[in-house]
Length: 195
Image (tube, rainbow, N blue to C red; front, top):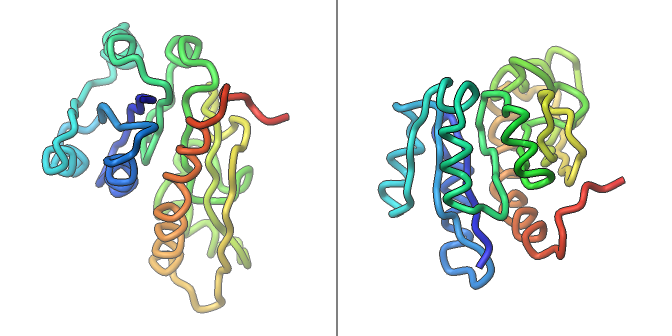
């Protein structure tokens, strides 16, 4: 049974979707959710779904080895960032090479980087008069949104779309594709970065 640890910062809809998707799986399970926000709604979702969830601060994450040691004790096969807003420290990435993935609400390399998350992304898509947007699932490296791309799915941006309309379309793409991509990655013999 493959083991998944999720990192989230906010409401946790992607985390909940993953937990439910793998709930009856013979191949993988979400063993823990970690958050940098002690008030994140994801903590309530985990409580309702009987999944272990913990919050941590910046010192535990990037200045000490507390979160790394927690991960080592959990022995994840894959670390999934689902709406997690902090940059991942290099020493954790070194320990879990090609085993940390993220979902981004745009078609990278467009609309990525520091500060580009949630509504900021969708507003930028509209301001730029894009005709399409989508989601990108990618490996995590030491730079925001620059790791190798694993999967993308697109949707149209209509002339009258608001940022909220785009957010709803992106949410649908996330719910549909994210668990399946995670499942495929865990089914692979090795998590190799595509060339």
